[in-house]
Amino acid sequence: MSTISAQLRQAQLRRGLPTVLAMTALLLAAVPAWPRTPQPAALTVLAAASLTDAFRALAAEYHRSTGADVRLSFGSSAALKTQIQQGAPADVFASADREQMEPLARAGLVAAPRVLAHNRLAVAVPAKGAKVRSVADLAKPGVRLVLAAPTAPAGRYADEMLRRLDGARGYQRGFAGRALANVVSREANVRAALAKVELGETDAAVVYATDAMASRKVRALPVPAMAQVRAVYLIAVVADSHNRQLAEGFVRLALSPHGQAALRRYGFQ
Image (spheres, helix red, strand yellow):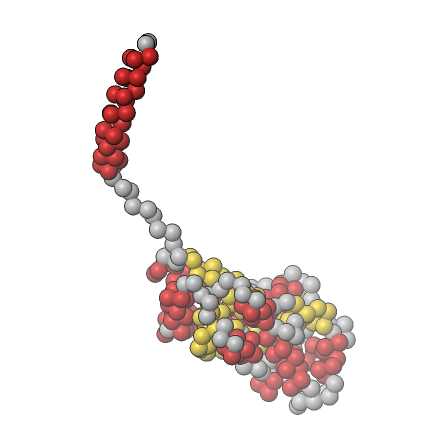
């Protein structure tokens, strides 16, 4: 091909290029734009370990009604409080006591805590072949006792229960010291303490009544009324929540008559 012919051909191609681009744009515009499937919103709820069963039920119901993916993280209320203080992502916090919630409220890390529920203590023993038959037996030599860690609300409540029994009617002075001498471990949270009984690794554990109720592998021994501790649970939206509307909706569900009825089904008061 001569040089002149090649130059003519290139000129024709350049003149036709705008037409080709215009036709391509028209074809693309004619293609239907498929709507994007929106990703479901995710809600992160940090809750005391004793709320495990009740909150799983509430989370499933909230997902059905809103489509939101509720991510539950359970643990000691003290550990969860620390996570929030350190900036861990969270939308809702439910604590097993006021002592973990109130510092967060004073620091502006949670908004307007509300009372969620109440709980009480029980002594969990194996459902069969239990060595411990009454709360008084916790101080007997050779008994293996497990409590939650002192920083966990359940551990602090257990210590308070033992102190109240020390020297009370039917209990000798020094009861608390002897019972504490039988402690073989202090677990990170109350569900971990319950697991020790379920696995046969201890003779008894002081847990919440709701925890003992949730397990078929243990039997609950009642705590005398004079030593019973009433645990107060609080719930609040985390101030840095990126899903505030959904977080407020979850809190409303938990506090609603329907949510409260669900908590009562799991033994909360």
